[in-house]
Image 1 (cartoon, helix red, strand yellow):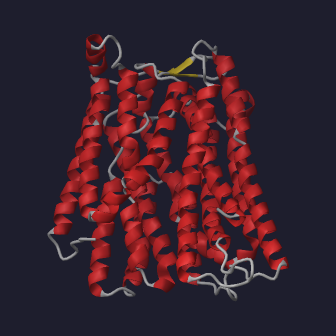
Image 2: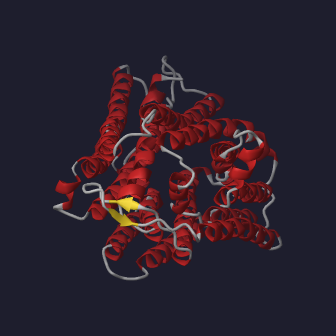
Image 3: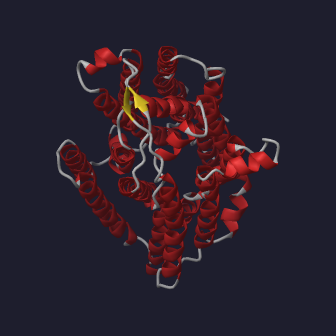
Length: 512
């Protein structure tokens, strides 16, 4: 651990702390906003678009390397604005409604936050390069082995910082929502407002990180030590910048239009651009390696693109199973802690087994782990509680399911990233990482679209009230949630397994 490692770790930690408002946001959305499950799933698609733009954002950071602090400030400003909007929604809904409907304000806040976090994430990635010194305190260059070890340590600490942020805020949420079951609506909204004010620490942490980064770099320069930034000026790649700008304009135009298939149009356009970039990159690999990468990327894309149940499952857990804010925070804490443990315990498996094997294993495990949620919907917890003296109730089953599932979600991407690290040309590793990250983020966009379609077929509604008057604005109907969970579980297992069989029987077979 070095002082120079701390600044990017602070930015990563701030990204983890963003989970502080997740529980509050879920409850406010469920209780007070009249947005359908299908519409919310569609919002997840738009919220994921900033992460697809990591390649052009990364190039912007390279171009303005000396001005990274400004980009961190821009990201912090977007995050702070999102939090302030949500604070206004829960504390002064009448004033906010006088300008825009509450649902419109919520959508604006939901889109601002990921834009800020994506910008800061790209800058933090660049800061990790500067964080690892090229020379020791005596000005002697480090050897290849030492340099590789420090870079590995830096990236490992980065993942730990993010998950540590999740753990911290889950613990804070458990404390905040202790003994709040009997709170009246006004008091509960006041508690939500306090959480959003506390969350303003997030942009403060990230800005503090870049300030510390500047201090560390200036101290090294004052001592005459070699800097770790890029040598010379980065040339502008107008294809990357132009493509990124065109994508932003297209997304804004379609997102604000009344076009029925705006999301689908943006998805096809962005996927086409990314596939073109991948095709260009594959020219730098030998044919066998290129085929392996295509097969690997296809398997992982489909695994990550399967649809999810959507918000209806959480609504059911709140309304019918009695899961409150504190218990959902407990589940979040378990998820974060076991994800960290899982990355360590399952690392040997990822090193010894092929990507196809790991995806098959994860697919089967995910399918099995969808059964408890289906069982909870159909009342299996009532049967188990009656035969165990109330021990194995709904909360016990939810905790056990979360504990087993948590590590699995964290390892799906690791094998492909490891393959790129080993096989990508040295001068193009960063570009390969950026393009493949965008490609796999597109899979999450595909998952959001699939979730939206399924929620249009299987309609799930919840009871919500006006935050000012307390009058009911929608009623609960979970009659089709069971069918939705069964269909999602079936797709989750069948589609990835089918793709693995097809790829492994083709010239794109992967044994990596």
